[in-house]
Length: 124
Image (cartoon, rainbow, N blue to C red; front, side, top):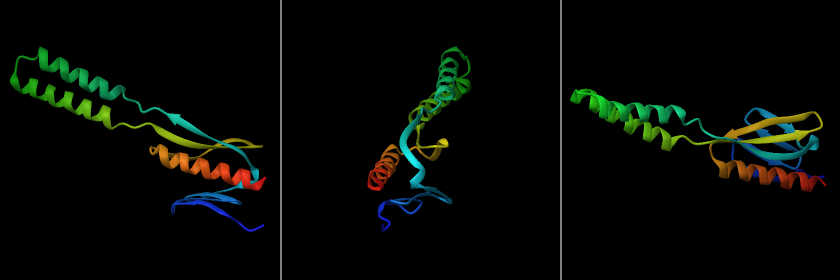
């Protein structure tokens, strides 16, 4: 049977026979299922930075310390907004589960998972 390509973006490709991520290659023959993993971003440091900045703004007597507190508050808010969760592709096989791909782009992960599912269905 001829190898059919379901997805290719340069660094990741999914065919009826293989799943290639960078320098790693997985045989689709052994893959029984795929799933998406989700790891939320750790926003605690951003919250702490913002709270420390807020306290500095209201407690400090000197204008310079208040300004530093304001900058810390702004930096904490900016950090909080920019932190993104990490998404993963997990492959299940007879030998267990393995994480094959990570990205902060959920749409990219979903496209890869859709292609992997198409490959599994194509295999029959």
